[in-house]
Length: 318
Image (cartoon, rainbow, N blue to C red):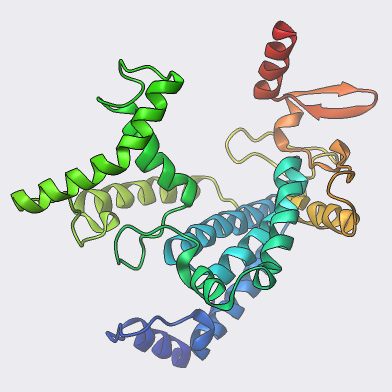
C-alpha cells in the first residue's frame, strides 16, 4: 500500500501523541480516514484476483467483526454493538445458523425501539455503557452479562462448598444455598476489611504481561512463516485449499457467503417471526464438500458430525 510522505508524517504524529485525556474515534482524524480508504481500496483490489483471494479477504472481514464485537462489550459502546450484530446477519443466513439469524432480526428490532420503552435516564445509562457488566473502573474491562454469570454464580456453585461437591441439588438445598449467598458475600467483604486484605488484580492488563507478549510474538512468527510458504492471494480464478491444494468446482461458493446472506436477509424482511421460512439451499457450500458431502435428491449437503450425533441421540431416545 503506497502512502505519501505527508500522510506518513501525520500518522506518526497521531500515533506518538501522548495525550490520553480523551478517547479518539477513527473518524475524528483526517489522516486515519485517508488510511482507511486506501486500505479498503487495497482489499478490494486483492479480492478481485480470484475466488481464493476473495475468500481470505472475506475471512479477514469476519474476524474483524468478531474483534469489533469484543471491543463493543469491553468498552461499553452500544452503537458499535448494534452495528456489529447487524453486520453479522448475512453470515448467520449464509452459514445455515438460522436460529441465530431469526433471533438477531428480532433482537435488533427490539433494541432500536428500546428508547420508546425506557425512561430517558435509564436509556442514557444503559446505552452509555450500562448494558455490559463491570467489576473495576478500567476502560477495557466490560464483561458480557452471561459470562458474568458463568464467572461468578456458576463458578461458586462448582467449587468446594458449592452445590456440585457433596451437597446435592435438591430443591431444599438449592433454596438454602441461594438465599445464604447474599449474606455470605457480605460476611466475606467485612472479613477482608477487618484483616486488611483483599483479592484484587493488578492495574496492568493481562495482555501486557511479558509472558503473554512472548507467546503472541511466537504465534505471529508462526503465522508469518506459514503464509510465506502458502501465499493466500493467488491470481487464480478457482478456489483452492492452501494446505492440501484441493481445487473446488463451480458449486463451491463459500467466497460469496456475504452476498448470498444479503439476498437471504432481503427475502425475509417484512415477514412474520413465527412463520418466516429459511431454506437450506440458501447456504453456501464450503470447500470441504469436495471430500465430505452427500447427495440427496440432486442436492449436495455437507456432512456435519455434530448434526449426525444429535440425530442418533434423538433416535435412540425416541
